[in-house]
Image 1 (cartoon, rainbow, N blue to C red):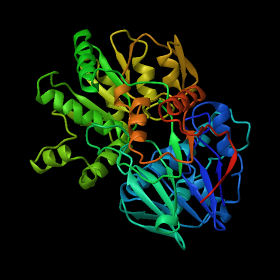
Image 2: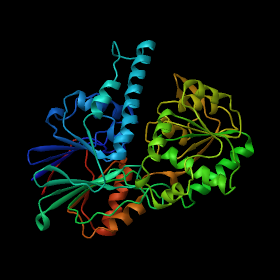
Image 3: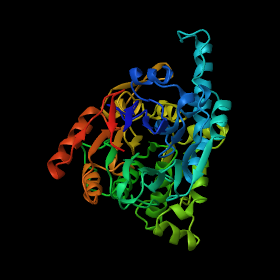
Image 4: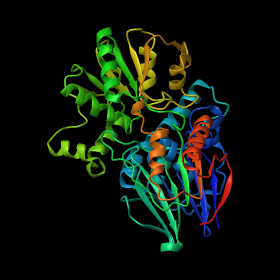
Length: 464
C-alpha cells in the first residue's frame, strides 16, 4: 500500500504540496507558497509537516510560485534530493525563485525599517542565496522522459497546457498489466490558447489528483481577443491609461502576442505598450528560447520571421528609472506589470497612481484569489490599502476570465471524458470550497466517478 497526504491546495488555490509515500520513499509533488488570506500565508512560516531531510524526491508540475515557492525553504530545512521538472520549468524557476527570495528580503527590510513586525528583527522566509542553493538540486528532463524513482516506480511529465513547461505528473508502479498509475494534474490548461499546446490525454489512470480552480465557472463566451480589443479601444476613446496587472510568466506573453495581432489586423490603433516587470522581460526571453514547446501556429509565425511577442510600440521598463518614467504617461497607453493579483511588485505603484482617476481602466486577466488586492478591487471595494494608505478606486474596472490559463469546468469535464476508464478515486484540490464542491457534483453526475475533496493534512491509503 501507499499513502497520499495533502499538505496544501486544500480549500484554497495556493500552497500546492502533496506527499506520496511509497516503497519506503517519500515523493513530494509540488512545493508551493501559500498566498492570499493571512491565515493561509502563516502556513509558510510553520515547520514543514514532515522532516524535509526524509523526503527523497521532489517533482514539480510547473514554475508558478504557488507550486514552487517553498522550495528554497524546504532545502534550507534539510532537503537535499533531486528536484525533477521540465526544462522550461527549470529555466523559469531560475528567475522566479531568486525574485521571490528578493521580495522576501525586501519585505523583511521594510518591516525592520518601519517597525511593524512582531519579530525583532524581522527575517525573510528565505534568501536569494537559499534560492540559488535550491536551483542546484534541479534535474530538468524532456516531456515524456522516463524518470526511474525507485525500482519499477516510474515518473513522467506530460504537457498540461497551462504555462510554458507545465506538466501533469504520471507516476506508474509495476510493469505492464500489473502496473498501477496516479496522475497529479498540476494546473490544467485550456484548448485553443495562443502560444501553448493543448493538454495531452492520459490513459489507464487508477488515482487522479485534479485541480478545481474554475470548478464552478465557465469562461466568457466572447473570445479574449475580442474583449481585449473593446477594452483597449474604449480606453483610447476616454483618453486614459489601461493598466493590466498580469503574471510575469504566461499571461504577459499572451497579452503581447494578442496586442500585436490586433494591431496588425487594425482592430486597435498602435499605441505605446509598457512592460514594467523585469521578471516578465526575462520570462519572455525564455519563451523565445523554447519554441519547440509552443503550438504549431507560434512556430510557423516564428519560422516566417515574425517577432510574436513584440507590438510595434513596445517599451521595456527594466530599470527603476525606466519604471519611474512610466509615471509621466498620461493617456492612450497600455501598462502591463506584475504581480497578477496585485499582491506586491511594481504594479502597486501603478495602481496607487492610476486608481483614483476615472479616465483610467484597470483590467484583470486572471484568477484573483480570496484575500488579494485584486479580489478586493474586482468585488467593488471603494478603496484599497497600498503602502500603508487607502487609495480610492475610481478607475473603470474590467475583467476577462477567458485569459485564464486554467480550464473551466466544461473543459475539465471534456478532458476527463477522454479517460479510457474511471479512476478508482479522484481527489479535487487547488480550489476554493465552492469550486471544488461544484466540480465534484459535475463529475459524479456526468460520469459516476468516486470523488473526494481532501482537507489539509488528510491521508489516504492507495493501492499502488
